[in-house]
Image (tube, rainbow, N blue to C red; front, side, top):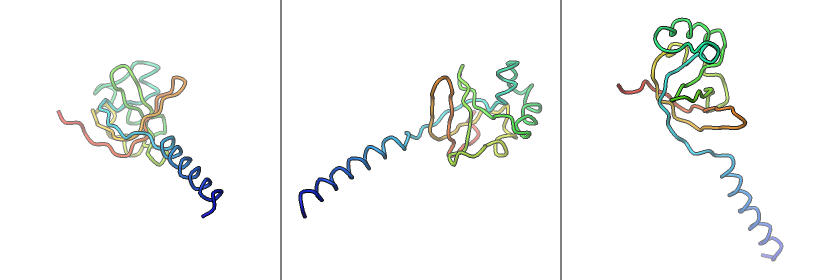
Length: 120
């Protein structure tokens, strides 16, 4: 094999390794309350008292999120599709989501691979 081909293959392997690290975020889990982000941010509405209203808002397409402590994460599917249909019935409930977290310029997003009701 020529030196040029060997050098090219070495650079290609390095670039693939760097690219894999950039593309893949570490998979983690978070437990929190499923919320209707619009009402939660605008009115502080959350919990069992807001579950029915929040579920309607999420079904109508408003953003669905996960409240973990004082941080609200917008939830999207790992395929970057909305999670509204899957999570509307869980507004006001505590769930554990597994996926990848992305934070930038004040935005907090979790790309959800899986979710389940949290253990009491």
